[in-house]
Image (cartoon, rainbow, N blue to C red; front, top):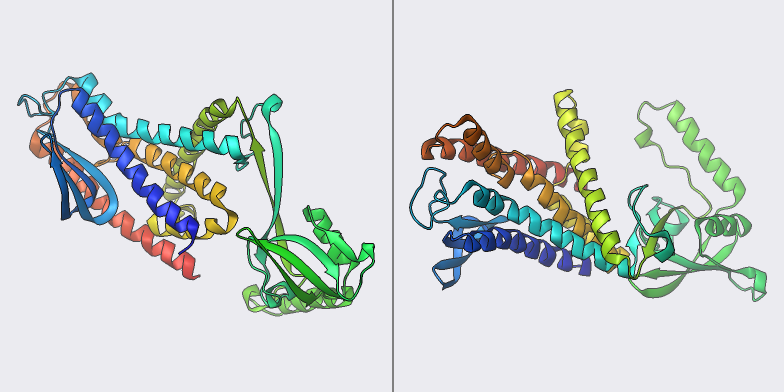
Length: 392
């Protein structure tokens, strides 16, 4: 289990607890009694404690959490119940969880701005006068059957140095600080035995391999082209090899000082909008009859755990970045008018208030129980997609 996975699991658990704490504190402040504060969904696994009339529980289904309020139905008028609260108080209780997730994301992105915020969108905000740029060049992917794979290099390794073996001249050693230097060095040392010094999870290691010559690279490309032209499925053809066989990528980080809270706040807004646009794109694909395209953009808890497991190889900064994005996703998904979620409950309440119709217990339960069943089915479907994507 990687550090990224450990931090990710603990982080998601804290985000869920923080979300429910938002509902909890808003209800308490508004005079609404909280009967249960649960982590996970029932059936109940264990009662952790009971204090001031609230039972704190751990539940078997690790899909989220909940706060059970006294008289949760809008039609309940008992003193201390949710139903008896004013409309502004109900709205505050329902959006408080989303607010806490956005605050958590702001806090995470502020910390990242201080230590180095990775750039993940083109127009990502920063303050020019208070921005120091750090650049990290890593191996985004290692080609199968390549010289790099044979030498033991893996995805996300950082190549620090390439040197000709059995050579002590200064021009036999090349320090790698960019994608361009990596490409120029492998071209210059083509066909020769080299020692590669790389960094993985903070530790440096040196391995040796022979770089392919220019003729071998050309032959590999020709073989691939011939295979593709005579084969209906290009996946059956061996991928063309480069001198080393890696695909480099650049991660840019910007470090701030006094402007970190501002950067964190604006980035929270930018990522929230980007997430909302992503949800809109998925819904659009579904309405256009393109479910496969929609599935490619969707990930559930299994996919998130897999991402956290991989992020550890890039360091704690990227794990925190993913955690901040997960917090935003929780906020955005919960505010959407989906039955059984916060936004769905808010939407139903406001619609019935606008229509001046009573929202009966039976109607409310029917709407949200149907929504909950649909969410569970969607969860199973997305999990199936995630597992297939990971195996593939």
